[in-house]
Image (cartoon, rainbow, N blue to C red; front, side, top):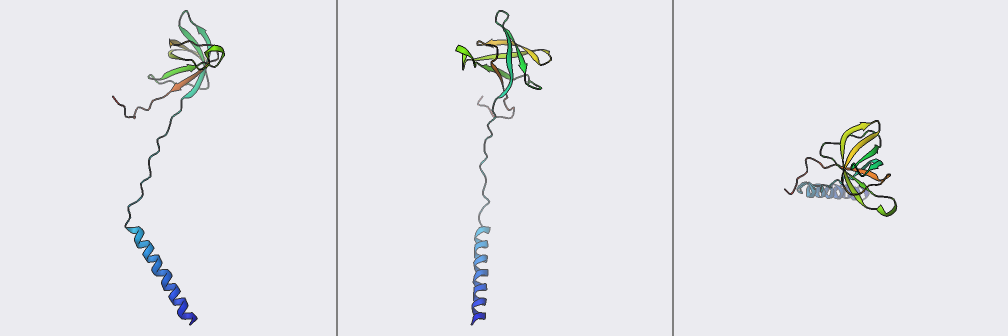
Length: 128
């Protein structure tokens, strides 16, 4: 009697396993949704000196700063009345140690403002 129960239990487990495996074999593989990676702007420097009359600034870079030709640099005010105000700057290519010269494109800057680098992926599809 016990032997018969063991045999029927084993056959039940085996047949259930076969049914489950065969039901999974016909389904298509599940495709994972591609998660878009958000690229954050990098803090790369701070404003060290401002010459409003000549419309240029000196920025003090953090570490090694390699700026692509099409790079967009911008600053965000963090002191006094300029909190949250932004400005655009373009590096001229002149450098001395950790300091780089940059032309003021727009906005108002203050010493100590953070300088951010925005990098656009060249492989991105555009709406143009």
